Amino acid sequence: MARARKRHVQTSFAYKKLDKNRQHRGGARKNAGRKPTGDFASHATRPAIDKRRPQHATLRAVAEVGWLRRLDIYAAVRHALRTVLARSNEFRIVHFSIQNTHIHLLVEANDKRALANGMRAFQISAAKAINTVYSRRRRLAQRRTGRVFADRYYTEDISSVRQVRNTLSYVLNNWRRHRDDAGAYSLFEGRLDPYASGLAFVGWREPIPENERSLPRDYEPPEVSPPRTWLLNTGWTRAKSISMFETPGPRKIRRVDA
Image (cartoon, rainbow, N blue to C red):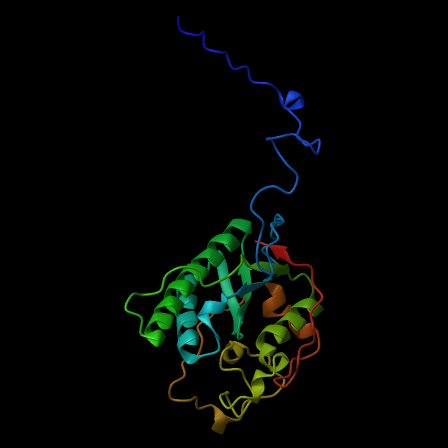
C-alpha cells in the first residue's frame, strides 16, 4: 500500500527554524543583494530639476579604454555632441572638457526626464564611437563592445551666479588643475585646452590675438549648444571674470547620482 503523501504547510517567517546562531533561515536579510561598485555607486534619488538651473555632470571611463585625452577620442566625443544637438529644445550640452579618466559636462535640461534621456543619448553615442576608436587603435579583428563609462553619471545643481562662474572655470580650465597644460599640444600657445570647449566661450578675460586665431591643421572646433539659461548666458558675468590661466581649486559639492 502506497504511503500517503505528506502535505507541505508553508509557515510564516516568524516560525521558520532557527540555525545555531539564532538567525532565521531564508527571507529578507540585512545587507543582502548585489553591492554597488565604483567610486560613484550611490543610488540616491535625483530631485526634481529646475530648467533655469544648469547641471554639472561627470562621467568616468573604465580603465580598459585608457587615457581619454587623445585626438581620436576627442573626435569620438565631438561625434556624440552632434547627436544631442537635435535635442536642443529640451537638453543642451553647453560646455565640456575631456580629462584623462573622465569627462565634465555643463548641461541645461528642461526637466529630470530630459536630463536622463539626453545624457543617455550622449553616453551611448560616445561609447560606440570610442569603442570603434579603441578597436582601430588596437587593430582588433572584432570590434570592441560593452561599457565605456564605469559608473552612472553624477551631477551638481548650479543655483547661483558665483557657483556657475566657478563651475565654468572648473570645467574649461580643469586641465590646469591636473597639470596637463604642461603638455606640448595646446591651443594658442598654451592659452586653451584643445580637449575642452574653451573656443566656444566668449567671456574670457584675455582676448585671443588676431594673428593667433589659426588652429592646428588636424584640429576641429567642438560643437556645443549655445546657453539659454540666464545663469550661463548672462548671470555669470556679474561675478569675477574668468582668466584662461586660472587654476581651479578642489570642489566641495553635494553630488547626486543619476
